[in-house]
Image (cartoon, rainbow, N blue to C red):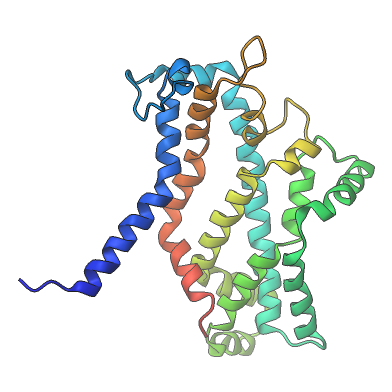
Length: 274
């Protein structure tokens, strides 16, 4: 049997890289299954002596886990849906419409991706505070409706590759550009939509700064509460419960990706092709 050395080397490298990437998540699961004394043991105990499955139930009951998860889900869903529609609409304009200065405007839009979030932190809070939107979900609605530069670029690249004949046939039939977008281009762009939903949902689900800045304790998200709530009476962190809560925390975006992974991969891989 002849061994394909290059293919074997490739598969070996992929397995090693996969193990390296999954290593932190595996360590998180092991931490969630340990007793508190095992976390402080030296030398390090790689495997728990007895798997503490009750840590997941304790983490769930220690805080109002379902309530904070619901807050995170509401915010992430609102933002993911609104930013996907808004970014698709703007990307359609950049891809299919002609206007003076379109290229410089698109370049300016892409340049905003280089701005760190921390720069706009104080102005963002002041704007929403004066509008009376602090401790509400309206900031995420407005953020979504304003679109996201990366997602606009994603949809623009996807729409550029669609045949011009579809658009011309619709115009001949008397369809407006709004109708062309909603009836032809948007239904055909499910790979880009899936990629946008997964990416934007992950952004918001894992965001720590905005909920800390704009939401009160009862309306905050899991990303915030996981870092502050799991403490004993003396204020010491309960790391095994933090790990158990974190394992449950990653499940919703992971499930969303597994459901939409085919469209996500197709959207990312075809967005740069003509």
